[in-house]
Length: 261
Image (cartoon, rainbow, N blue to C red; front, side):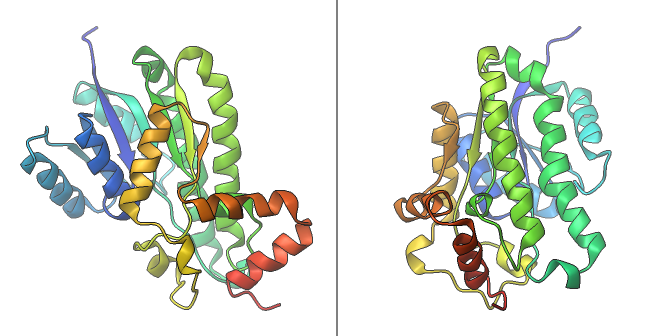
């Protein structure tokens, strides 16, 4: 069988943190496969990276709400003679509002993208990740540490991502595969508009740029860290749910997300 070329697969790469992750991995001489629904934006980013003298990333348009999306991505990579040495699961979205009042199908689609697709892509390529001594970077959130009235399903999916990634870090370490959960706080991207969070304001001292978050995630993955939380204030805030009574943490999360008290 012909040898497949190792690449770094990045989902949700069309904008925001995903696009910045692509730029960081490209700077560090990774050959990339960019995955998202919006092919035009992916090609624009691929052209931008190619203009810096780096290899032009491969572009794969895929809708991760589809249950066959991971299999389709794997088939496309194989057809191009590629296999992942690193997998970056950045794709995801949130919805703001009370779970019982929002569209159920849209919330189930959020679960598909945030957890099912991430799990499939994390496990599907373990053999190639082991061969290349690579790794998995799963983008979780500060929401991973909190119950979230006003974003109940989103926070639950991100709690899953953190728990799954930490366990996988332990399980795959003997095989030479690094697994890191990246847990950013508030970042100014398209996420807020997609989630319907225009009226939600977070303290400015928690804000991080997408570029800084991406660099923190990359460095932590290469260092073999289990979890990385960019920003000193965010790291302190992540301790609160572990120290405060659960009811108080729940109330504070609901207050921050604008849920009626």
